[in-house]
Length: 113
Ligand code: 5GP
Ligand code: ZN
Image 1: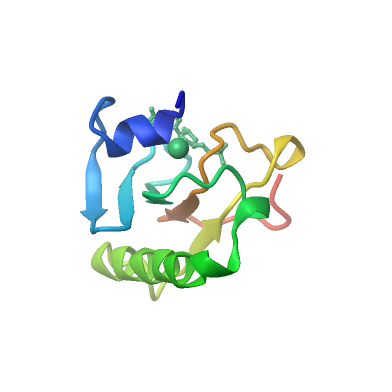
Image 2: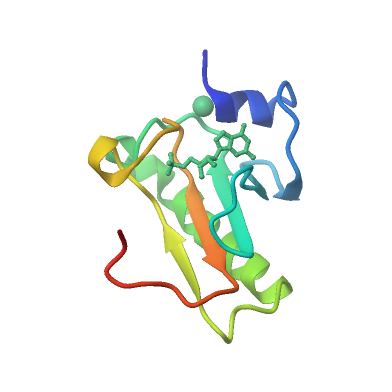
């Protein structure tokens, strides 16, 4: 499968890993949009949030717990952080393997651009 993030999971593309377990990988975004910009992905290939199924509920929940843990470790939890999942083109999704963006370390704008 020609998926950039599956290749990162398989170590075919290098990444700066932040966290890994049986089902989840987190790594630094290659083009950071904030001082902290980490991507949290399931090892299961799910193209967009539209394909998240009931059997994925625990996995998706754990992705948020990983984001919380990283935010706490990076000492941005109290200041605040943003978790984003883009779906399809108008939202700006460019990699079709679901991922949470964990963004922190600066004041965020609202509404997002
Ligand atoms: P999306 O636009 O799909 O929500 O987010 C995709 C993100 O993946 C972007 O922030 C982009 O910088 C990041 N990205 C794309 N390719 C790579 C890569 O090969 N390595 C890493 N570390 N990040 C990537
Ligand atoms: Zn994939």
